[in-house]
Length: 176
Image 1: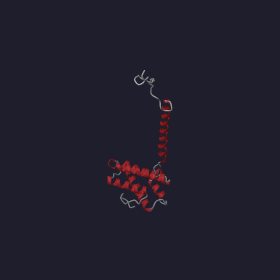
Image 2: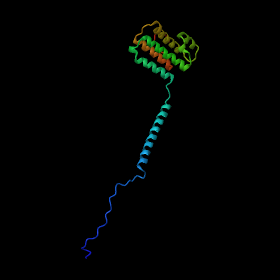
Image 3: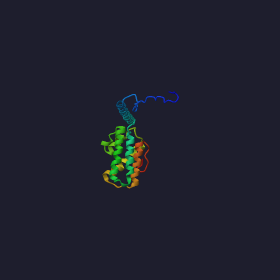
Image 4: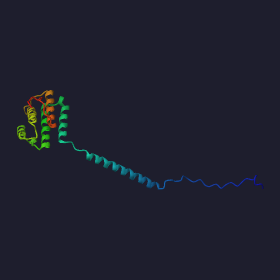
């Protein structure tokens, strides 16, 4: 036989093999590890959120009182003067009780004004302004006198100025 013309012997054929797993770990370990990783990331997110929430300072007494006054201002057109007088008086009294330790929530207006008369916390102008506001709120609460929207807004303005520690203006019908 001629080596050039004869058919060479074909190379042996091997069986076809299925896909080769190239990940070094079993599938169940990979899935379990992914779940654990997701749980840890969720826990880390929750802890971060709680820490950031804990860092937020609670609102101060002044911020709470001013927020209450601002809420009243937004409801002024539909407010009942009696109810508004109670709320303004309550906001001021709670603020002075919480901020300065006065017993404003358990005293009448006259008792409270007498208690602050010798107090160095307030200037004479602030004491007069506080007297005007308490007198007006007492008239709204107990005498049930009416008040128009402008008078109520002036009352809220003076109350907000007193809470901020500013000099009250002469808008509510008194002479501070």
